[in-house]
Amino acid sequence: MKTLEQAYQEFDLNRLIEQQLVGTPEALNAYEECCGRYVGQQKIALYWHGKNGETASYTFEQLNQAAAQLANYLTTLGLQAGDRIAGLLPRTPELVITILATWRMGAVYQPLFTAFESKAIEHRIATAQTQLVVTNDEQRPKLNGLAIPHIITVHHTGSLADGDVDFWQALSEQSDECPAVMRRFDDDFLMMFTSGTTGLAKSVPVPLKALLAFKGYMQHALDLQEQDVFWNLADPGWAYGLYYGITAPLSLGHSTIMDERPFAVEHALETIQRYRVTNLAGSPTAFRMLFGFKEKVDASIREHLRVVSSAGEPLTPEVIHWFKQDLGVNIFDQYGQTELGMVIANHHALQHEKKVGSAGYAIPGHRFAVLDAQHQEVVTGEVGTLALDCEQSPMMWFKGYDGHNRKSFVGRYYLTGDTVRLNENHGIDFIGRADDVITTSGYRVGPFDVESTLLECEEVLESAVVGKPDAERTEIVKAFVVLKPQYQASEELMVKLQNYVRSRLSKHAYPREIEFIVQLPKTSSGKIQRNLLKQLEIEKVQQHAMQKVG
Image (cartoon, rainbow, N blue to C red; front, side, top):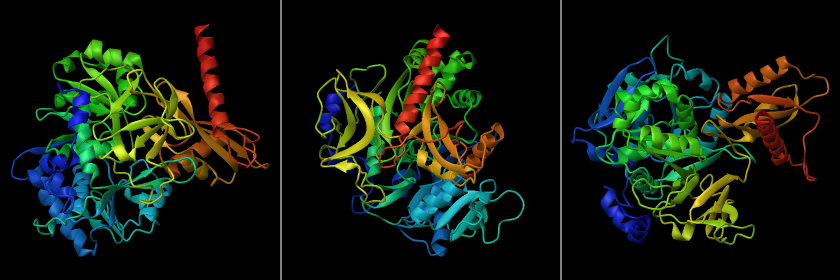
């Protein structure tokens, strides 16, 4: 096995461009890189498991044909390279076809998570100036009243909404020949959004250069091999699922698995066993749930499961040891952001020191630094803000929010906003978030989104939202609410507010707990001090744990 140091020394961006892309930095197309180049090899690109138990597989040839037809239809609408086209779809073949068709015509694909409600969707399509949304019958009502020039619906029941076009009908009327529109290395092919604390979700345009970085993660950190059966548990409505569940494996000519059913231990185990998965990736929440129901895990998984990777907050030692001892497989922690992709990892394919609880080391092509308050690099053992050294990270592709907002950049560094320790092995120990973003069940929730939705309720005067520590979900969303004088706190009002956020924002972002208080803690300039509220919740959880022990 190659060492991490060897991989660093051998890294050569120009050589990777020549070896791993069929295009060039001057003429590149994401569809060609992720599908077109593999047409004629008769390889399976997608294994699909439907929500009602259906199963199907799709070759690169089949996806090529459907993507050509959809791209041709989109062109008839006047859409062109650079336009934003969104998918509000569950994990279905139509989602993959939509993505590939968008790329084929040089347009930019924008994911819309299916748990989003109309408010969250409206903000994202308005910010991105989205020209078309592909959705299905179940999701379609969320788009009512929104300003969207074109809507295509994967239609199964009832009648189409006025002005909508049936997905498969549109494809059937088009040619399956469609030349790919070439773009440049710095042109965008994805439009992502990330949640923050000081405003609504910000857009993160992803340039074609990121394709190389995505491949590097799959090859070094995940050790994806040709004979592997790969499954990424993450939803492609989010960065990890889209970057590394669809884009990256397909770019390597590798099949991917999409299970439309909501995550459950039984579903996951069935899929792992049905396809004899060898290479598994996902969020810590999923792996903690497997550990929590370990009595349901069939030991026969040991026969085929080779490597497991966890992206997000650190796993607990108990989960890591269980995978190793009971399943005979290493599960490694890894780190990334929507803005960066995965940039730090314990690498399955490279030899280096492994420390339980550590996020690991920079993926080749990146260099991280830990900075103090004066933005100077700290020494081993010290705590600071995790940053990426832009001058020494040739794989880095993030240009700034909305493509130009570079407030998170200081000098040569991009500041992640995460607090870490530079450990004794010169790797990264994750400590916590420097901002207030909440990590719940593998999802990142911006408190401002929840707070602004609560403020739409007539009873609410002010609100502050924090993440409360939770053993199963990492954190749960907790809201502190100040009511207007004429309203009284009650159980009924709490449920009403919770249901309102669920219906307007998303099902994973609603506050599982609401505490009614008289006033919010604020700075002298009037800013809400969420950190104080969060610290109180941490102390309560710690006290409760001590009482249980006592």
